[in-house]
Amino acid sequence: MNDRELQEYVAQLEHRVKDLEGELAKAKAQILEQGRYLQTVLGLMTKVNASLDLKTVLANIMEVAEALTNAEASSLLLYDPEADELFFEVATGEKGETVKQFRLKRGQGIAGYVLETGEPILVADVSSDPRHAKVVDQQSGFLTQNLIAVPLMIGETTKGVLEVLNRRDGTFAQSDVDILMAISSLCAVAIDKAQAHQALQELFWDLVRAIVSMLDARNPYTRGHSERVMDFSIAIARELGLSETECERIRLSALLHDIGKVSIPDAILLKGEQLTDEEFELVKLHPEIGYRILAPIKRMQPYLDGIRYHHERLSGQGYPFGLKGDEIPLDARIIAIADVFDALTSDRPYREALDSRSAIDVIRKDVPEHLDSDVFAAFLRAWEKGKIVEQKRRPPTQSPFAVMDENRVNFSHQGLSNS
Image (cartoon, rainbow, N blue to C red; front, top):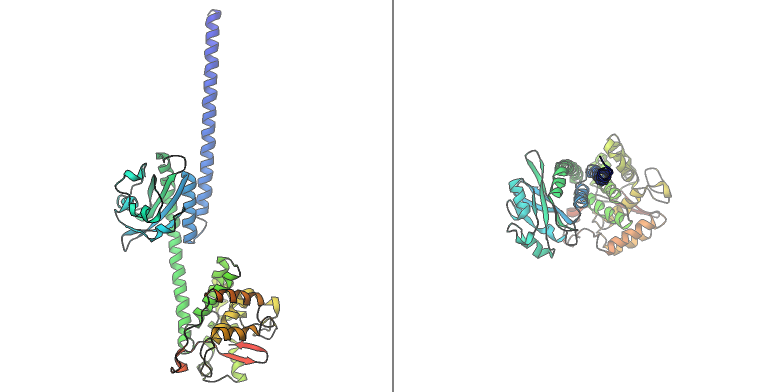
């Protein structure tokens, strides 16, 4: 090999080395990109499966889908097997809330087509696809340009259809379909778990309401009291800026706040006049009795404070323990004001219900000595916004015994003491 040939050979080798370096850099970039993709998928899917709350699960799925496909918006339609149709459970983007009113029959629209066929679909130009349900865009004002729709299935069972809309940097590719199909089964399982949990939660609440209704049925005066105290307590809690988790805790605690009255004899509960001191001492046991009924149930532990202490007063003149000030949990302070307000605005055999303003004036006299001023301020804000409304008062000619509520209110020089 002469010098010229050697130089050419070296030049070829150098060129090949550069080519290999380029290929290596490209392969390295692809590996890093795949690694980042896998990290994103694992992280986001861990988030999806971390909750049993259906709304949270669906919101996380939307986040996953949009992040992985660089989509402008997304929607998740759940399948209603009884109606054999899809409904928009979650829709993101500027017009997301508007589309929630629509339902799609099997075969209707692109999502209905996916429901019918069980196959994913990529539509690069939605305007030219005859399957597109144009009414959704027309009513919402959202312009769908391109989309991917994939079925969410567990085996042969369809849970819904996931759509991503309008890729931000162009149009979707088959790789985007592959990505969504890769996570669709995991999303379907997460939805199934959340729906099962929601069904159990609904059953639990139905059972609790049934128990409360049975208690109310003992006394013709108790109709609806626990439900109203629950609603009022939630309104107050939200005005205080409490989290949804805290509000849910207060919701159940308020609904069950008088469960201990199951032990109070009918002769006292149904008495048509104010109670004697001895009778009132028996009534004062009901918060502790309610606590002891529920305390052995592990699930009930977070809810016991509101049940046990809702008759305590900041002055220490409440019951059953005479707690003072900050010794009284916030849940109990909230339920206390909701409880007093409903008692005052409910009819009694020995008096008619007060109107809201008169009841508020009565409560105001016990703030801040007996009742929490911050909670009372939140109560007033909720009342002014119409979130707290007293029960419909009976007509003047109606017997007061026909619409009695469950609480009795006893007035004393120490302020309100409602049992």
